[in-house]
Image 1 (tube, one colour):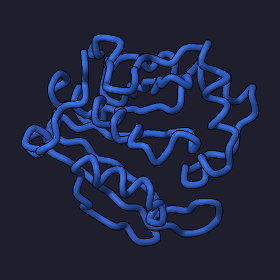
Image 2: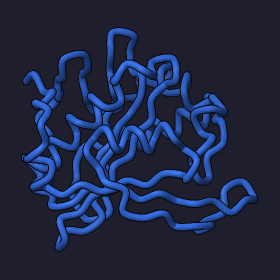
Image 3: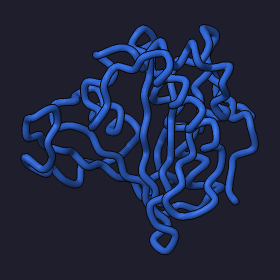
Image 4: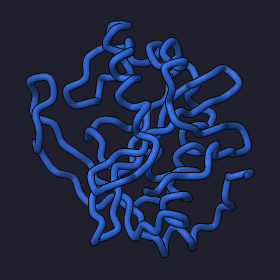
Length: 192
């Protein structure tokens, strides 16, 4: 079993497992159409649907086997403002997929970058990943910018590769390798 030493602290944030006590904060973003706009199969959730979601992700506190997801609450002074996750895609290839969501009221201040950086740093330095990739809708400019800020390179644009709300959509694929992560110019954001 692999899990970070909780909590992970950065200059402005704390990352820790999601708990049922986070329901109100999680529901605050899961109910918003602008948050789920680019998410495959996602619609704005009711409070009960958010409760089921929180209960499901509360158990995603470690990587035990290939395919597992590590989902961490992004906690700021205002409470839980989002989540970051790593999905363990391949043990042999030491590969994971990055995911993230941030309440729009907290956007534009680098908080998503700070949270994702801390999780990637754990993934590369402590979990021993070789490659982390991320995917987003071809028109999700904010997500593409975030991955670029993380030092990920765009590796592909899959044209009309999936259906989203009845329309064919492009998918962008970004990735970063362990030696690229270690060689980046910016300093680590972790404080503990």
